[in-house]
Image (cartoon, rainbow, N blue to C red; front, side, top):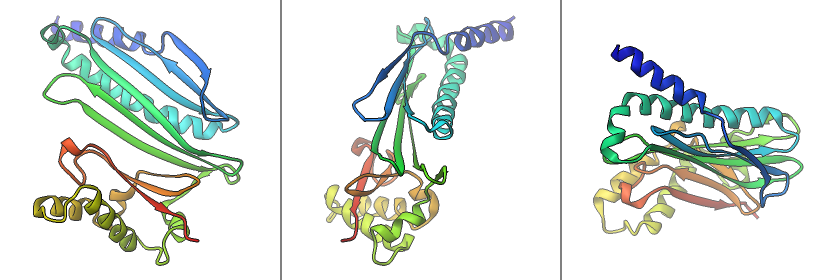
Length: 227
């Protein structure tokens, strides 16, 4: 009976997954905001998804990523459903986006989401897509490095990020923080998966806890284009 009740809760959560959808133009030219507000007594969400005009493949990637986060939220909410009464309110999920660049050649998108399904802290998500509209492919970080670094290597990128983060976080005299920065910026691919481009340059994002304590939040390093 317990398993049946849990399955019923999950079915109800999934059933309301895409109710109350609203489509409206955003402040970014060529981008529409698709907002959905699924919810019930157990889980409520405010999902804002960008839709790039004329780019169905990119839109599919964006939608799949946000939906995967939402599915994880629903799964966690189902597992912890007995805690809702204790908290006195439904579990929550919220997704947001930024499009730093959207021109004739490419689009760069940053996705973020936050979910709370019990415990001391919620869970934060972050992902990015930089898309070549001409080739209809994602643009790799490696192909962008020559635009911002005289020595276009991940090692050089790490050095720049370490210097910028040390200043931004006032870590010059904090050995523990320096160690976090050093480890979080190690020149390996997984540390530099989240990035966008804009008219100003390349921005690398470091999620919460990667290079500093959680209280510092997400960190971002903007590297201007070479002149």
